[in-house]
Image 1 (cartoon, rainbow, N blue to C red):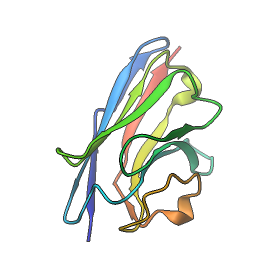
Image 2: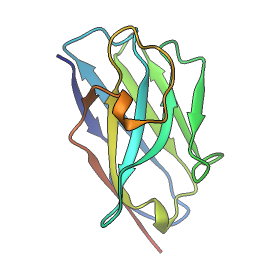
Image 3: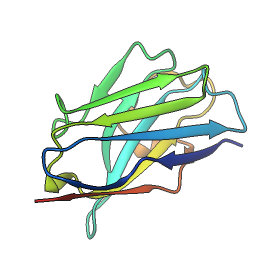
Image 4: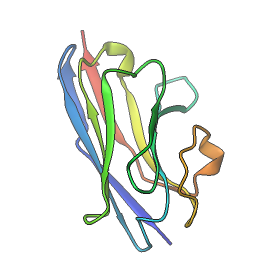
Length: 126
């Protein structure tokens, strides 16, 4: 059983930056892909970014491409989401997710992630 704990959310002005962290415990971290998703009020959860098991392959939603960067440190069992040039439309609860063990490839689909964190709120003011 993998536990995921996000941190780093908060209130920031438009144009600002935040760095989210997701610490994993309770299972092998380095053999599974990780992802970030978000859910705004009244909207469905959407894909933000994903990274493969080694960190060598990443993919992003078009809405965040060029502004957000996903990375991971397998020695620390942690995945990060660096968010720059934030916009009010980025306001949402951000969730970290982990795929099943040995599923090391990136994925856009939330149904392919087995474990989820509790979420961290990001609010961007205009």
